[in-house]
Image 1 (tube, chains in turn purple, orange):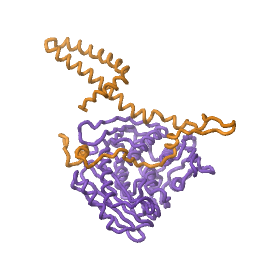
Image 2 (spheres, each protein chain N blue to C red):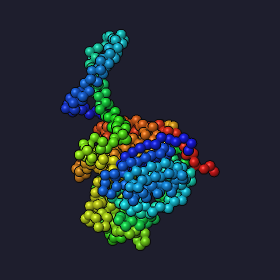
Image 3 (cartoon, each protein chain N blue to C red):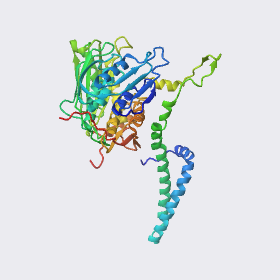
Image 4 (cartoon, rainbow over the protein chains, first blue to last red):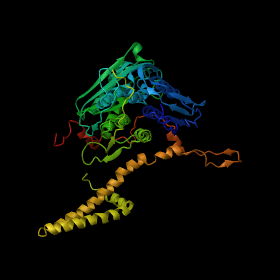
Length: 373
Length: 154
């Protein structure tokens, strides 16, 4: 790049992914200091190093400098090149951790991205691949990212601590994104779910269903929960089970909730019945929060609005998560975009809590590295 | 929307925004005066008292709406964009007292450090879960479903 953009500086390891993603998209170098500087074990962790390696694989010409203790990271982004990439993710975090950032970057590659990620598919910390498949992909479609090659396939399932899962994600590239007007979530017409179990009796997954269904049936009759019991080499290295639920509305909004069993050797055993009931409760909480975008995907929606054409985009969200609030601050420092934020009180309608209407004008970002055919 | 704020809330609001209220009231009154003059010219015969009453109510309503706006919208904006610079500028340990002229006692702002180095996760955990077995809690989201009540225009 001919002109050097001014370097942004941050402290602490929190929000590392969004800083690096926004740095890559905006072309501004970023310096992160004091990464766990006061910790007994200072510096970057394995999963963060793995994330940086993944970022290095999908870009061309990035410069990454880390000091000896790993407490300072300098990242000067290169061009997003894409293509076919294989990556072994750290088992400390699930594949969702890596995939969330890839979802932000994939539409802006030079060559369409096709990536195989190996590691933990479902854990208790990050959004699982099931949930991202059910919520984030439809969201990207709203912005005009669609096509035959747009898919997320779960090839093998892997639970913590062993991992051993594998997913394939491929995404087409776009030159520009469509502005969106997501102001009415519509009404929930059905609830779908996926219960999975690996290296335990398939009966565990069956026991989840009834308790989840009994609570949700009080609201809507159209509930179907798929069973996914993977065997042999496809079932990873550790036992476990879990449930993910997705509520779909008439206007194409997807709200999700999920729970997974405790990793082997950590905590007490979870009863499948309790897990099902608690997961159903979490889904109801998510419906109470409401909005047109699931709470885990708020920042993805806001990013795609920012990178849209120079036109007004609107999206109705539930309460903003701390992650999203920090993301908004980062959007301001990387792209100089400030959102108009209007609170919409719930009033007397029986539609859950207060909502927030976010409005912005896109920066007119276009993918200049996309090859013309 | 139609819900009137509780008396206690109104009291605190008026205390907080009393300055704003005064300014706003005078503005509103100016506006009202103009409007009254205009109205008076147009129809002196119709019930002026009724119209005035309606206007009094309007000024109060406007003031309340203004205060409500002040309380919610800019606060959220201020919460998000107001404190952006502090995070980057803040330097640690400089103010710590020295021991024997050699060692410096670090007293990090615990909360801030905790936030800077906490877990990087996009999940938004529920802080105060509702009790979904209660009928009224269940009713609070009843209309989010197709089985609930639909708006008139659909």
